Amino acid sequence: MKDLRGKTAFITGGASGMGLAMAEAFGREGMNVMLADIEADVALKKVEELRAKQIKAECVQVDVTSRDSLRNGALATIAKFGKVHLVANNAGIGAGGPFGGVPEGDWDWVIDVNLKGVVYGMEVFAPLIESHGEGGHFVNTASMAGHISPGGMEPYCATKFAVVAMSEGWQQQLAPKDIGVSVLCPGLVSTNIYAGRRNRQNTVYGEKGKDFGQDNLEQQRQWMAGGIDPLVVGQRVVEGVKDNDMYIFTHVEYEGVVRERFERVMAGFDKSKQSPALNTLPKDRRLDVPPGAR
Image (tube, rainbow, N blue to C red; front, side, top):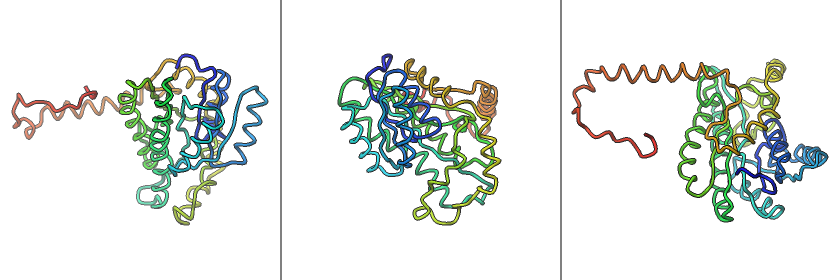
């Protein structure tokens, strides 16, 4: 997708943070943008702001934990713009805590939004993009937490590692259909993800955990405010889409930390090469490595 003008982008979590920044960046490229967000009133206000910047924008209320909700969002987008070319599966929440202390409902909540929401977005929109034959692109928001795993962030990291892994596989499967897949892996960005519990569905995920981690909300707000400008992320995403990049990074200072992790992985291979147990195996055995993993 070198030329974005006149094409349509559907962005989940589009009414704030990186989603809204992507909407503005895509809009500046001449795209139609559909803000898909669970907060309908906020999305309406943001649409007006985008229109004031001469961006063709609409919005639709979408809950990414519901496949049917995403289907309805897709139908609304096609009714308004005719086709969808680019989907940013961006909606996400943060959850974590001490080992054994994360409420069960929070595990379900973060998996439903961060992981299943991406699955539903891919599976709903890929056939629609394929059907018009003009090609397209998916941008799936993961995180640097999809490559490194700080203690206390296990639910969040688990879902973000999954988004990276799924995107790598989907990229291989969809490339022959002229559909690109990128995975966005930012570090700290100045967004309101710290306040994600405002949209937690307590009737679904239970009352326990609804206020979990909220005692230091102001501290979290101040910490997030130190992140980079979301508009820079949006511009970087446009670059990545045009270049059909698999990985879109925004915080290059994490390169060393990621390299250290892979060095530990490689050290594990080196040690296993000396394993007495493994050395009992036939030396000429066939390596069963899946195609595409080599």
